[in-house]
Image (cartoon, rainbow over all chains, first blue to last red; front, side, top):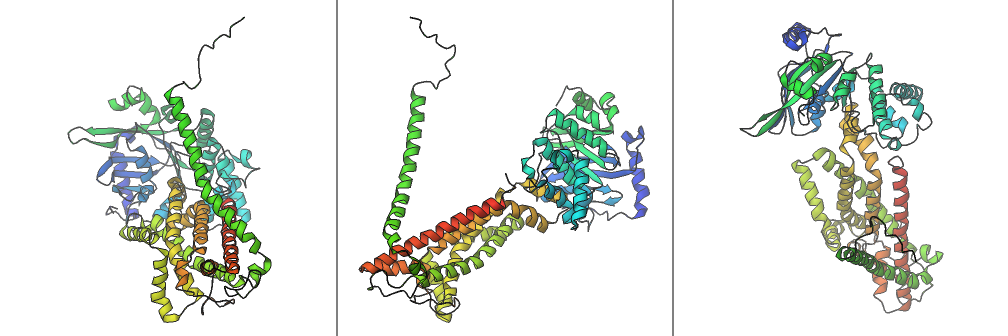
Length: 294
Length: 296
C-alpha cells in the first residue's frame, strides 16, 4: 500500500484544501450546498501493474447525491471502493494520491480501514444479505459495534427497516431467513443493514441494476428520503437514474493508449447533474449522455 | 376416413443418431449407478445377515471379550465398543479444532502466502500417507517411550483425520461468497469478526459434515491401532494409559480365526461399527440442517 506523506489532517491544512477546491473549474459555476466531505486529490489506482484509474480529483459534498456514470471498465466502482478503503481487500490493489474525508487523510499512516468503514457504509451491486434472519442481518452492524441491549437493537432494526421502506413487508417475518426475500426486498434489506450503523456516507455500487423498475423506483425514493441525513455516492449505468436522483454527476471514461495497448479509467467531467446532461463541456461527455457512445 | 391433420410444427426430439446417443448415455448412467450399488448392497446384506444374530444388549455392553475358541453368545464386545468410542472421540477432539483452525488460516489469513501454501501441500501429502505408516510413526515416537494406550491410538487416528478435516473445511470456506465478506467489512467489521460471524456460520454445515465423515472413517481404521493400543479383553476406562481395544482391531483378531464363535463376534463387531458410522452420518445431516436453516 502506497502510504502518502499526508498525515491525519491538522486544522492548519484546511485552508489549503479550500484553495484546492477553488482551483477546480467545474466547481466554479455551482454553489455547493454543504462543505466537501470527500476530496480526492490525484488518485490513481493500480491492480498489480495495471493502472485501473488515472489521476482522479473531485470533491463530494455533504447531504448531496453524487452519481458516477461512464462506460464499463472506466473505473467508477474502483474509485467508489477507494472512498471506504474496500480496495484494501484486494491484495494487489494500490492507491496513489490521497483522499481526504472531512479534512482527514483516508490513506495516511495510522488510519484504520475499520474506523473508516464504520463511518462510510456501502451497498453492493448484487444484493448480498447474510445467511441469517432478517433481524440478525440488520442487527449485525450494531452488534459488531458493541450494542447488546435487546430493546435498543429492536429499536434500531425497526428504524432502519422503516428508513429502507421494508418494515411493512417484513415485520411479520423478522426471524425468517434474509435469503428468502425477493431481489428488491433483499437490496432494501442490505440498505437497512447499512443504515443501521448510522453511517456518515452511504456508497452505492449500482444498487438497482439487478432490480425491476418498481423496485428501482422504491430505492430511488428511499435515496431522496434519506438524503437529508446521509451523503450518498452512487455508481450507475442508468443515465436516467443519475438525472433522477443525483445533484452532481461525474463522468468517467476509458483512455486507450493504442501504442502500449493499455487502458485506464479517467475522470472526464464533473459538475452539477443538470449541467452535465444539458450543457456538457467535454465532447466525450456529450457523446455519452446523448447516447452516441458507450 | 378423416386423416389426422399433421401438426404445423414437430417439436419432438428428431429421430436419428442424436436420439440414439441420448438413449445410450441414459442407459449407461443407469447401468453405472446399479453397478455402484451392487458392492454396497452386498456388503450391507452380508454384514447384516451374518452379524445381526450376534448383536444383543449383552454383546454391545457386556464383557469381557472371550478367547477366540469360546462359542458365540458368551461374553461381549463392550470393551471394544467403549474403546472405539473413546479413542475416536479423543482423536476428534484433537483433530477437528486444529483442522478447522488450520483451514481458516489457509483460506482467510494465509491466502497465497508461503506458509499457507506449505500447510496446504503438507495436508495433501499427509492425506496420501498409508494409515499403517501413521501407526508406525506414533509407535516410534510415542509408544516406545510411554507404552501402549488409548491416547497413542487417538494420536494416530488424529493424524489421519487432520488432513481430511483441513482440506474439507477449506473447500467449505472457499464456497462462502466474497460479497458476504465484503458486506461485513463494509459495516466496519474486523477480520476476526468477519471470520467468526459471517464466514464460519455460512460454512459450518459443510465443515461439520466433513469432520463427521473424517471421524466415521477413522472409527473404522485398524492398522494404526494395531501398533498403538495393543489389545485387552476387559474395559480399560483410562484412555490415557495401558493397553486398550477397539472394534476394528477385534474384527481383525476374530475374523482371522477358524472358530465359529470368533467369526460370529467379528461379524457382530462389523455390524456395530457400520451402525456407529451410520448414526454419525444421521447426526451430520441433522446438524447440517440445523446450522444452515437460514441458508435457503
